[in-house]
Length: 68
Image (cartoon, rainbow, N blue to C red; front, side, top):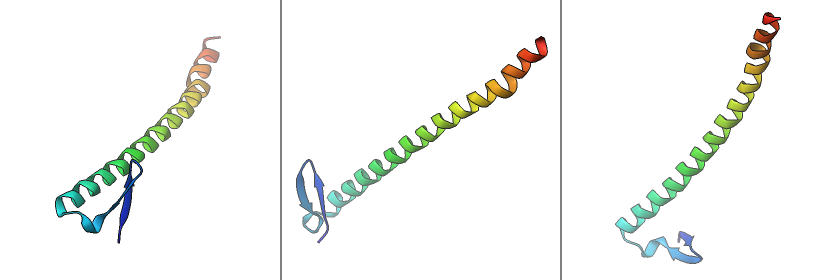
């Protein structure tokens, strides 16, 4: 018996019809996709910050030194 909880209510998937089961599966996939998107965004932001540091170190500061 597979169960899942939504808003504190426990549901038994054995008692659901095929359409209800598909909706639940789509909802679970959407949650998974959302979590993965948030993780990708966090990784992209961290990479951007690090690339900004390297840009400053290797391009901006080097360019400023060349002007002196």
